[in-house]
Length: 152
Image (cartoon, rainbow, N blue to C red; front, side):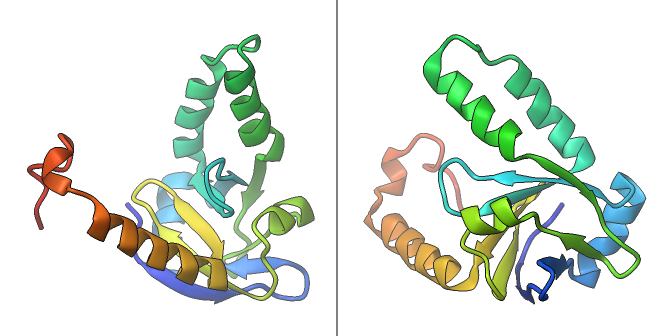
């Protein structure tokens, strides 16, 4: 399970280094293999350990090729999907189309989301956090069935 937000840098070749705290789990449980794709609701990338991606791929396979929205979702997620393996230094290369989609240049944020990571441009991440904070403050959590009993 992945959690926490880590500031990371892209090198001149477009590589990122996964923070050490995640590398052991990625090596032991997923053989250093990840799939990177786009987030269809935000301008960020999603990094799935290979076994998690297999579950996503199974869900995508069940979507229709004739229903336009389902087909568009498949096209985006599968079309951008890129399998990669961490090198000996815990680095992975982000293909140019994926870097462009998320507006990644030099500074980024890698954000654990339990079964996957989000990869954001650092400025976009800060903007997203502020928008999320405002949305939560404006939401009547008690009126939301899924959040009514949620407490920390």
